[in-house]
Length: 313
Image (cartoon, rainbow, N blue to C red; front, side, top):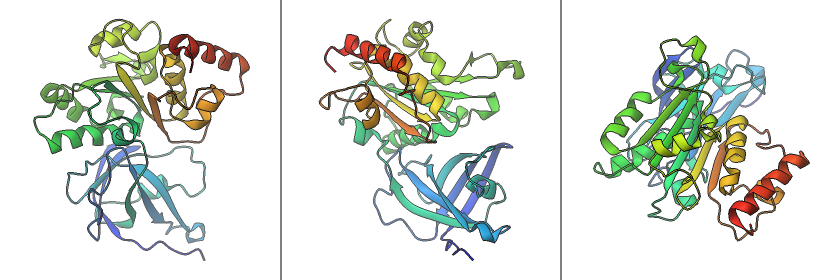
């Protein structure tokens, strides 16, 4: 029989936004020794034992943290039930059988380099363009909360949160982000990809990466306070969190503007010099290649675009 996880945390609250989207708040049994416990943008590992099918054992998965490190006690996670899991023992299917008060495993150590501290210098005044598909919003909420909690008078005018989902109900944290836009200057734009099924929706439509289509770039720039043509590395850095489609399309659509990915594999394929400073960072939820690196025509075009935008890359 597979060894069980030793539970060391409690689900203190579960908020179901839809049948397949929920917020889980988890409290570890012991206070986290590290100070801070994590950096906004990092993740922790959640785990459960499969009690209904014990022969499958336990499962652990990394989940981005929504909470800010300045918040006490609970750790917050924004999670979607996976309809087509890659394993036969998916964590989300076990999570959806839990309720407030249930026990679970939590590796309460912040992990990951998808943070402002790791990617840019302190005091960088460029816009931080945060591109989120679905629950990819989590690290960006953490970043915004943390700045305001550490300084209630702080401005978020250099934060641009672009959030895409299928339906309006899937736009989690919308009320919080709208409030931060009104009180702290956050640029917040949201879009849905299935407007025909949401006739009352009057906001933006399309996938979140569609904000970067060539025919929509000027409008985006205007809405976030840039001059036409101003969405370039000297004025902005880009962060993307979500699945392959959003990451890949955003990279490809901003390539001609000179945004350089941090990812080592992409840098090799695009023949980017090690001395060229990255201006685009992503956190990926699956293992699918984000751009078609085997397509010679696509790669030749991208290399030429980068060289034209940056000169010697």
